[in-house]
Length: 113
Image (tube, rainbow, N blue to C red; front, side, top):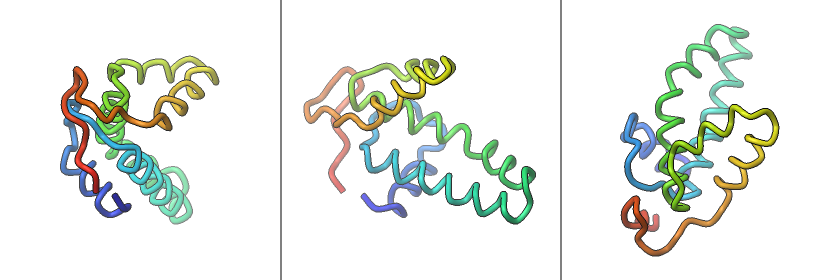
């Protein structure tokens, strides 16, 4: 999956917390969000980047939950990110872990791109 496909998939499932997301979908979407936020913060520090971050909060949470589903973890694991430093490290490890190739309690694995 390339960046365009990942962004389309994430925005088409704007608030869908069900199903699974491949690593490429998650990381391309996160990179896209980061690039747009940096550009908007260079144009208007704080204002446009803040609006963008607020507008993409729900799809970012949704793709994160679907990514966790791909490794057979509940989307509630996103809350571990509130624990300073350790929570962020745990989430990065989870998001970087290879997804399961077999069906799990969250459904079938995503189709390869």
